[in-house]
Length: 287
Image 1 (tube, rainbow, N blue to C red):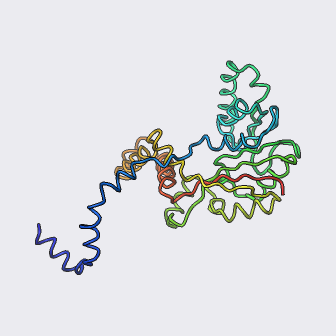
Image 2: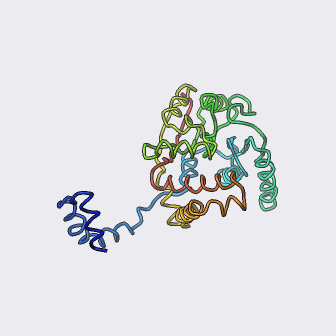
Image 3: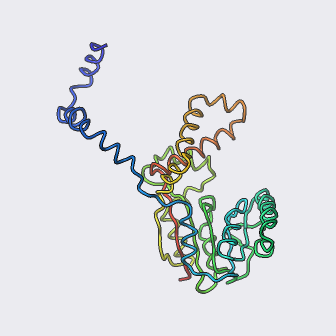
C-alpha cells in the first residue's frame, strides 16, 4: 500500500512542503480548539424575524393585509391573530385555497371572529383581485421566484398599497457559488424563473413599480437556525444522499417527476445552508 501511494505522489509531483507543514503540523495543533469554537451557536435569527418586522410597522388593529401566494393559509392566520389584521390570502392553486379554507374553519372553532377577519381566494401576483389603495400591508413570502412578470407583480403591490403602507417580500436568490449546471437543473426542477432568482432583476422591478427599498435584510442564517432547532438541513442532506445513490429505487416507487421534486427540495435547503442560495427580506414603501 505505501508503495502505491508513493507511485501516485510521484506521478502527481511532490506536494508543496509549505502546504504539508501547514496541513499536517500547524493545523492539527489548533483543530480541536477550532471545532470547539465552531460548536458555539452564532445565535441565528429564525422565522420569527419576519413577524418582528411586521410588528415594527405599528399597524393598528383592523388594518388590511394581503398574503400573496398564501399557500395553505398558515401565515394569513398568523398575521390576523398576532396583529389583529384583516387578511386576504391570494393563491393561484385551487388545492391551496381549499386547504386554507379548511384551516380557517378549524382555526375559527377556537377563534370565533377569524372567519370575519380572514378570507381566501384564487388569484395571481400579477393581477391581484383587490381595489386600488386598499391594503396597509402586502406580505409575500417565498413566492416571486415562480413569477415571470416581476415588473407586473411589483406594479400590483404598488397599486393596492395605501399611502403609508408597507410591503414585506421574502425571497431566495442564486449566488455566484451556485454553478451554472446546478442552477439550470434546480430552477427547472423547482419551477423557478431564472431571471426572477436574480437580485438585480428584483430590484429593477421594485424601482420600476415606484416602490422604495427601505431595508434589504440578509437572512442567510435561517438555515443555521433550522439546523440548530430541528436538524432539518442534515435530514435533507441525508435524503439527498440516498436519492442520488439509488435513484431507481425511488423512481420505481414514486415516479420520475416526484423523484426530481424531492431531490430539488432537498438540495434547495442544503444549498441555502451553504450559501449557494441567498435569503433576503425586502421592506418596501410607496416611492
